Image (cartoon, rainbow, N blue to C red; front, top):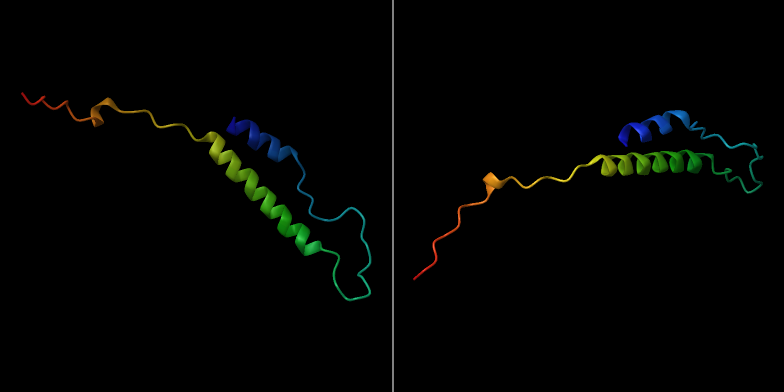
Length: 74
């Protein structure tokens, strides 16, 4: 499963630049280019965390860890 996710991530282009360049607004504020880069890194981080959680395997119970049963009082 982990290999499938890594393969899919290598096939998906991570293009952070917007498709259409809009001019800067008259108020002097940007068009959100930095926010799109940060959003891309945030999304990529979520995908990596999901891949790590998917690849985790449950711990099996080791029978040697359990103490022997105690004697019952009479």
